[in-house]
Length: 487
Image (cartoon, rainbow, N blue to C red; front, top):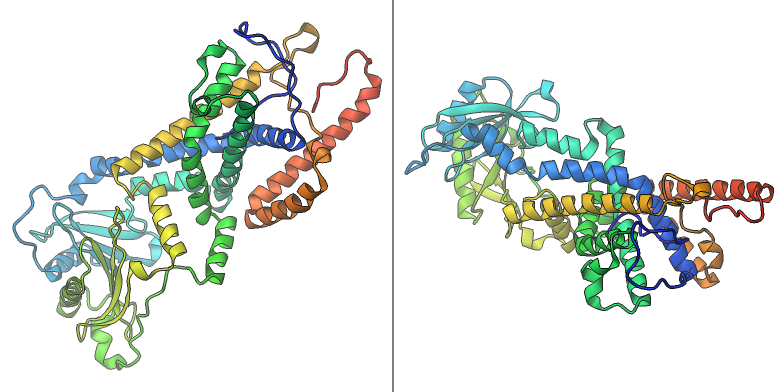
């Protein structure tokens, strides 16, 4: 859940409550502190979450968008009885694209075309992909791609990750992911405390209470119960989003290195093979699609199939003599296929192997989490779940801001555009043991998630300054008109 689980000084509601009002329950120091943090974080971080939700929602449509925009390139109109050798397909791609070196080949299967990827220095990280009909060896088109992604998918991916603002823009998505889990867990705790105090059943935790009329209580009920349903998904999005963020992602990678839990590398060295023996076979751009290079793709593919690498695969030629080619399974749907082998095309022998089943557990979970975050792991079901999470998060945010507005003072002498923050003072009321445990934990989390730590520190500084200013103004005010708590 995200956004404001607001309480504090009761204010008039937009409708008459159906039940007698109770005296407000004084929150515990921990509850007061969490409530104030949830309020401020929700108000200030919500705009970043809105952008992340909208751009993520757009990204969930990329498989269908690719089919609509590039279907004539990605698929064949008629599936033939037998595929032609890769040598012919690679040769046809080379004739259609004479420049650049071959970086990878993804053989077609079923109605999917064969992708022949070319690297060109002027494209930087981007590449040029030629799509070839595997049954006729006819090129069906070309696109500038980014790690296999089409231009439309690349554009939406950049929009979601950094708003097309480069390194500076990456901070927005990392900030959203850094606070999303805090808001979600904090909201669950606050709603649980409120429901427990009211002796509500478990049903009232998961179903909105529509008996409260049309006021802030009903809005809060929708906000909270929807957030409860979304919690697991939001925690998942936060965790997986942080794994490839700029600062927290770097710390995550360092942690995997320390635990020896990163995705295993596969050795492609052919130190025992003389350079003059393997040079003509291993160079990724050996003669503009000549016989030796093209025939090597067929040999390597045959070795990979015999070794059990079924389904979609990617064949990557060696970058220079003295190295093996690699073949990697690229099926990202469940159950995933991620096995890899290194092959010496000159001798058709496997020189190294790395199977997904042998990866460290954290490496497996990280890889699967990223695929699920991108909507690939479970196909259309994955896309629908991500779209539901994005729409649900947007609803929770709207209800949170609506609560802020509904809690605004409406008396003639105290009118305001929005509700006042929950009362401060939670930290002062915490027991010493909670501070001794909590402060080091918060510091550790802030170190692991730098943008979370910096913004939390900024919230604290602003709150302390606002409190000092409020205390200095208070003596000048009339005793009968105390300043609103937290103002």
